[in-house]
Length: 428
Image (tube, helix red, strand yellow):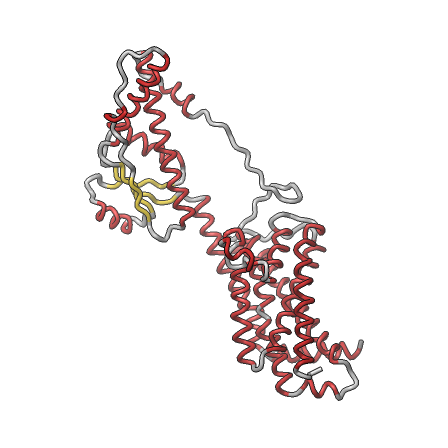
């Protein structure tokens, strides 16, 4: 036990001398988690809480076009700003940049007249079916097609949000068409205008939809940017110790420390265990530092507070296993790298790639189908799944085990590969 303690103390002293490595292990992830969480939180607020600036150019001016614009306003997604109807498409796009508007909508000339013609034709057909027609309905070929509404959008808009805007425009147009048909039908049957109160009752009679998050503990807490980003970038920080750990291993190989250990009355396995224990403690320290930022600092910089899962024992176990996996990867890179430059270059780049395909940079559900199989290979993916089970789904110990089992398999594979590499190089 004393030999193990001495070996751990030696590793700590070596680590504390390397100030640059300490900065990479602690300062870099702190900056990443604060900056990226702030950016993502602002994006979510723009989509969920704020309205999107929209220019509206009404080239029609009829009653139906005004009803369409009012329907858009009631949706609540947009901050409508009126544009001059005489603007050309080029002038309108220039005006978008001047008003910082992401979207511009053009209601074309003839929109109201075409909609009126369409509603009268539908009314005539309906009354004919009921045997109540007074006039013969128009032939379908003579009915005007409603000219399409044009939407100009800034290319920075994500496709998913653009599709949401497109859906909102279609919903507003459908509402306007339904309203025109309803008014025409009532007028034809009663020879008087549909009362506003009755119109509101008919058109606004919508059933509510219950939205219930399906957390494993049955709670209805909605996750925020902090709950995803803090664990994600903590995992990234853990695996980025590959830069320090792998160079440490390479340095000992180059200096001949491994060979000298054979002459000492101690086991090389003990030295390797001491190295891993030391760096596992470092990964746990990273967890404490980054999680503390989410709990204590974030509320003071207008970011959501990190809420720890109730099962702290499972949280510690997940952190410990993820840290061991990161350390195993660092040892593996160090064993097979032939120089410190190789260890730093390959280690850093590989972690970034594994993070990209593992769901750290981009959530796994947003990954293309072609990368789903590749994603399963990344140890960061399984670490992320384990943390998500705790933070986003409030899972229990038995739920976490399904994600920890692949991590254990990866750890064993990397440890065996590292030992095989050391034997091949005749270092043990």
